[in-house]
Length: 147
Image (cartoon, rainbow, N blue to C red; front, side, top):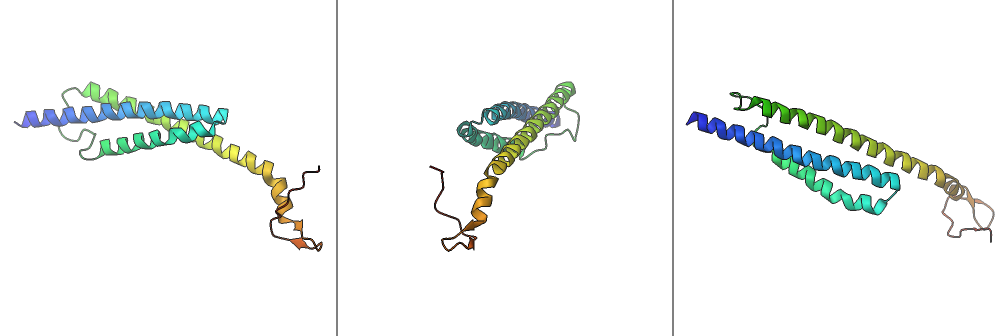
């Protein structure tokens, strides 16, 4: 009886590791697509990809609920398979983290670029003059186009 319970526990652990591996593989694919969307400056596609990533992250979290996914008791019946799954997960998580960091830095640099481009317009708004010729801190509602 004890060996059947241990076998079921090991099978459950292996199943959880395989499920997480599959989910992280999909997450990595989505992050690669995200980097492509950022490169192409396709904001709509980037926004549309967010819900699926959130669902995958929630699925990973729920997969981790309950029993631990590490070997704490007797060794599993197939330790080489478990170790291979763990190594795959480590590799996949590193890849996903790297893509996520790249994505964040690309968005951050693009937002900084947009801010630099808008700076002359915003500086003009901050130091504008009112109709009496006095400096005004209020935003002007009129845009001078030069035409």
